[in-house]
Amino acid sequence: QGWRAHDFFRLRLRRATEKKDQAIKECIRLWERLLLALEGTNDEFMVAVREALSKPQEDIRCVAVQQLGNRGLKVGKTEAAVLELVGLLKDPSPRVQLATAEQLKKLRHRAATPALMDVVSRSDVSMELRIQGIDALGQIADPRAVPILVQRIFAGDPPTLVGPSVAALGIIKH
Image 1 (tube, one colour):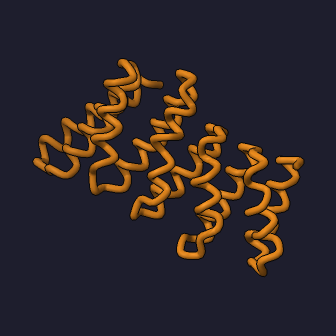
Image 2 (tube, rainbow, N blue to C red):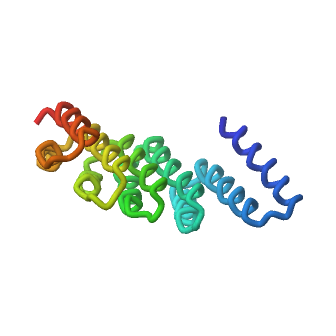
Image 3 (cartoon, rainbow, N blue to C red):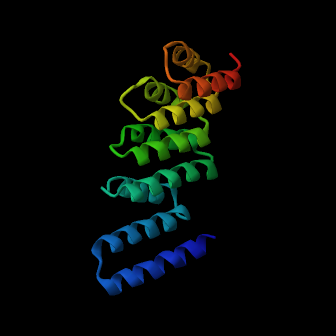
């Protein structure tokens, strides 16, 4: 699959070059660099990820978030990946925030608990992100999350938050 994606991006880059579309060329180059960096050292990979995360295009940042989570699982560096990801829960893009919460849920590392608890308790973030944060806390199963989940149940929150909170508490089995 890796070589197919790589070939696809090379073809897209060639087409973008022919059309002289700078924005597309930059996106394709960054995606290609991320794909190549997956096979490189951790330092090479992190340089490519940080570059992608610094770009204004949310699609590029979402891809970087996904690759960071995938790499963390692949090489067994889940804590390092989590520590890179938690700050992205405050990214200006709701799509990047959701992608980050999904990766934290997948990584299941307790280092993400405080940041996810913060997301769940905030009313200024999307309902979808709060639900994703609750689901992630359930998957991580850290007992430190119990008070915030119980608070969601009894705080008069809508059922869309109460149901996942009850489910997360059932998983944590505190």
